[in-house]
Length: 442
Image 1 (cartoon, helix red, strand yellow):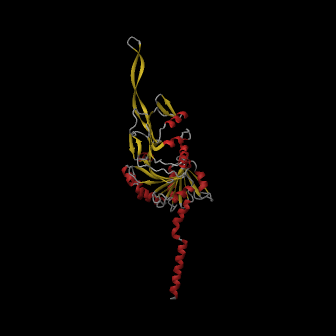
Image 2 (tube, one colour; image 1 turned 90 degrees about the horizontal axis):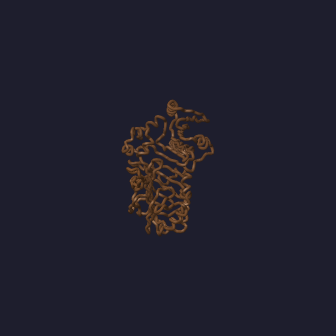
Image 3 (cartoon, rainbow, N blue to C red; image 1 turned 180 degrees about the horizontal axis):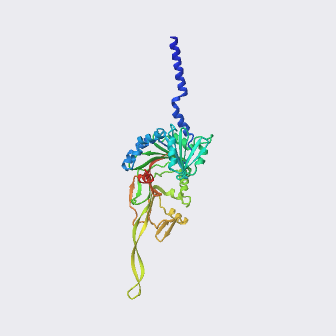
């Protein structure tokens, strides 16, 4: 009986020691350690790579991505194990507005990684440097730096590697950057396979505190769900529908927004004017006058051309070499522009102020906004429309709140789904064609 009691007490002691020391929890401690090496960045991201690839299978099949068999989760997992990469845990990515970017990948062993780095050195122009315990590989042709510790691989693209290295790797006083703390808290998209987070200066400049984005699988393109947190509460709500104008299918930039601006208090109007003034400060646009009369609907269109004919007189010589006036017709392409917004009261005072500031100029019966083409104007009691086409654009009731914008030959689409106190929920679509062009080497 005594021996059994001693044996039970011994087992209890071992169980207590295991619970206290937690030798089976080493992977969690490694991940926590990795997180302390993540650098300050404008954009931070976390990817569960294998799950992300599985989720994107339909996308790759639909778009017939060549050699997509190498982008399956099974193949990537086998390749990662070959080189000691731990892709079953999250992979971290980061980027900055200045143009640099990088990734931090967990490792479960460094023994297999050496062969991969040696192969890279053979196939590329590589300069290697030894700083303390870190062997740093610099691929000079690609502005890429690579090094590893026992538990992570650090890959960096850009011109600021040593700045980041000394601030985030060898600095013993380092602490987890705010942008990574914001990503890990993540109350909006906690279970998505790809999550991005930013609290950059570019956002804060326009009154935004931070933004979350998460990948949403779709076969037609790359979709990011988004949530933007603004610094001040502006109680705007998306209307189910509103007045809009028909856009051309060739237009590259369109805005179709319908907001509920009724019953705004004086303090909210002042706050809204302050925020929108940041967008128009360079041209001193009279935002306060606009907000006073705006009724919530705003449409803008730019892109494409339409063919117009015009009569002109040309002097020619007839058969007797006498000068004579001949009427001719010529054709030219005119850029397509449209601008419409609804008003609660006549907009004459606003238009006069735009004319006095030189933002709007009048030539005969047509107008120009700064360097825009000549525009015609149609005024109604509840609507102001500028347009460059022969006839004014058709009106209809729209149920969309959407911005389509072409930037650097890439078409983006942002759709506002809902607005609540201090948060804007929406989605961003990046066309798959552009992504395929950027990864044409696959």
